[in-house]
Image (cartoon, rainbow, N blue to C red):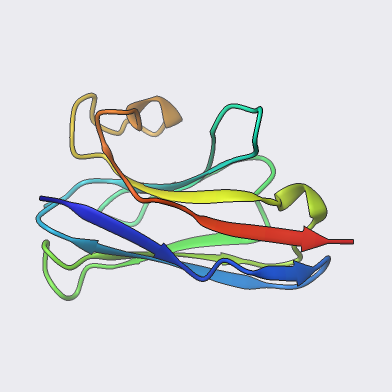
Length: 130
């Protein structure tokens, strides 16, 4: 059973920084991973994604401010994912979710590979005040 647990969400002021983490338990092998976010009443949107080899994808909102990284050094059953968020803005306020692409379609450099069939965490709340 694959489980993803996010942490690091908090309330910060505009211009501040946060580092989100996602701990993975269970084998996800070489799955690509990503961070999504969602605001109540809106669709979930991709923020940043990374494949096993480290190639990353960012949304326009995240480019230049956020950095996605991963730690695969503990093996394929204990991978982790991070999201360093700098220069935070009020519009970054959302629930942030970690996802592992463990089911088809395989990640192809777009957000569409990450769907409800994949492994999602429960989310961590980020609130940015002006």
